[in-house]
Image (cartoon, rainbow, N blue to C red):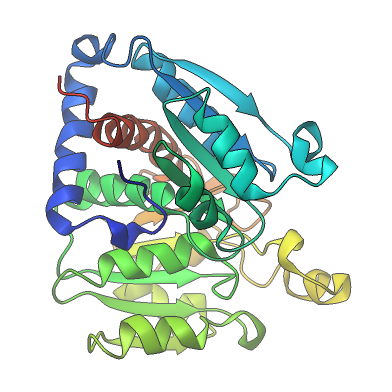
Length: 305
């Protein structure tokens, strides 16, 4: 039995295998319709979610399995003071696999130590979000056809954005990848990401404040939301929330084959006028997330199709 808490828990060979499985699911959905019959997924969401929770549930249903769980902490025994460890042990008695989202960094890891079934980290605080990264990787593969020799622009909240931190870790394993970090000073990429990932691997990166200046060199633009729930001071949030808004005008200098991504939800950082641009890939990303979660569930449950 194994869990996936961090994208780096998966080797490159395993990620390639998951990508291949996901693409086979896309091509042959009926082949997988009964793969998890009799299996149960528990979705333990201590923090609000639309896409991640529902895509996990859709993934399990499309594999022929069932879903139990809760969508907010107040409807679980944590509201009574139950520990994460005890919750994990208890749910292991009911389900074959657990997907957990929690506002505290490290909570899914703690759960994985006590659970007797696989645990998937569905997002923990500002730390990690490995299944979103798997969705991102499938999107990049299907849109760009490769992972190496790409210039990736990361824009917005790079300090608290767990999806950004996970994507940097994942893409750092491919050759000739460079990053352009676009953010205000208050939301720059944390030093630990630079010290643990970028600098030791000699990965080229630069930090800039202007989206327009960076645009012409980008192969991928990964927009992020300034997250109100991560701020201690509402005044700081209000001051920074509209720092970067992607509009058709700002795309005038972009490459014709730019891939525009966003983990969603968006507030107003991508104008709806961009949605009809052929380079907008964020709703494709959502669908790719379901397929990659299907592939990961199959892998962790050791189901052969």
